[in-house]
Amino acid sequence: MTWCDSEPNAASICFTNLEKIGVYGGTFDPVHQAHLILAREAAERFQLAKVILVPAAISPHKEAPEASAEARLHMLRAAIAGESLFEIDECELRRPPPSYTIDTIELMRVKFSRAQLFLLLGDDNLADLPSWRRFDELREMVTFIVLPRAKTEVRHEYLSVKRRIDISATEIRERVKRGEAIRYLVPEAVEEFIRSSCLYQEVSKSNPKL
Image (cartoon, rainbow, N blue to C red; front, top):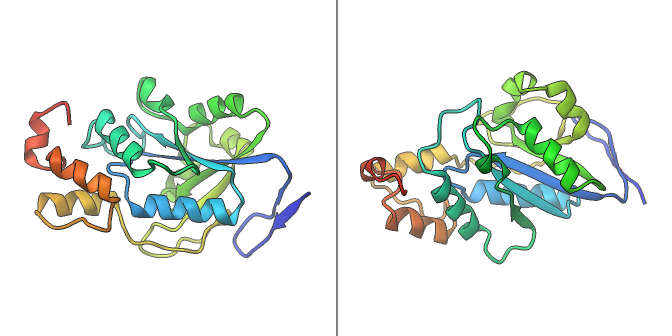
């Protein structure tokens, strides 16, 4: 069975009966509802069997995360508890930073040798995409699925989901610093962990365990 998707500003891609796996990397500092909703939207639209969340140690295109790897991993686990669609892979946390996507995809191609890989990324990353390490090789290994995250629409040629959710990790961290509520912006278990750990507050900077 083969299904082809064709739409304006998107590549025409034919999907075979190979298992389709989504890979979604990021700092997840913290993971929030937009990450999860858009990843599920992509899985449903493009019939992905699963979406693997890959927390980065340090992204080469972003500032170092405020929360530790342990804290971000804890929040991810809490956010997807009981959800069979999502899995976590810690490969980028186990190797020295920075975290290059091409290295992760090469590992995934070995792990899922009979699968078609789809790389989920926010449209706020598109401007830098051609400068990603070994980009020409990367785009031969994966099919890109763009998640609308930028405040204004970004034109591109890749597959994409239609839903747009204006939530950012930066906004959440700033709200915590100002003492404002983050309920409904993050899963309840993530909110509880941030509060109980005093995460993203001044006290967290002096506690390396957070």
